[in-house]
Image (cartoon, rainbow, N blue to C red; front, side, top):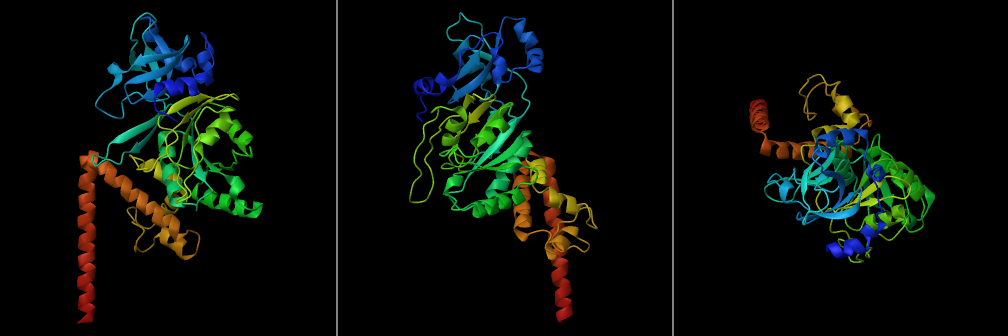
Length: 379
């Protein structure tokens, strides 16, 4: 899909129905939003939901009068987590001005944030006020459970309910193989629905449509995961451009270049996002804990409260590893995501940096003592 506003107006925007005074309810407007907006209404301003942000300079906003363009000059702070985003409820000028401006936005209920790939390690908000984080995973390629767990950590941290959709299920040769793949993902995604779907054949689309019919869903995944095809299937129309996956490496090109909010015929709205090459954690400690709930529960039974689950006596996690209750891959993934998240948090939190330095010194001293004891035994 082209990134120009005119292309969006002729495709996705055409899927936005005409709205009236009460039709914003179809986009998630409710009594709580109305109460939060009351001070702005007294000033003659209008509510609207951001359906697209075009390179941070101009928004398409759906209001009671329809889809309008609104300049974001007044809501473009230096903090990247505070810039207006697709899914935000905006405070917009009344008709008459040219241009019309977004003056503010209502406090977010949830927000999906990742770490950027830049050396500054800034957070990037991908979607706001989301109820479901739909993680698209293609079955046309080998399953990467570690990546699924990474997406899930961000999904839980956002405050949304994650849902894993295994796309291109028609490419799996038999039902037994598909069942095994679903089971593998369910093991990596405790407490999360895992839905096999073939958007091309329509299989499983009705189940997913029922899940996302209430509220706002954000569609996430790598390029080539079939997100745009899935968005079209849910919308019941070709609202998103679809491109072929490369035969060379099985990866897709960036069909979606902006984040777009699409109303669904069965209810609810969907935010489609560009394919994510990098999925860096951003202060997602509780999300990681929720993805690996069984390890967190086991850790509660360790002898030492600060057990690192490496070689400590009385470690319940290592005991579970030995008896096969816990798989090594899960523990390795848990450790990796915890370390990464701690590094990200430490860059913005001096207290955490100090704690990390103390932990490194403690472990260094323990390692040195162990080596000295070993040399003493060898003499």
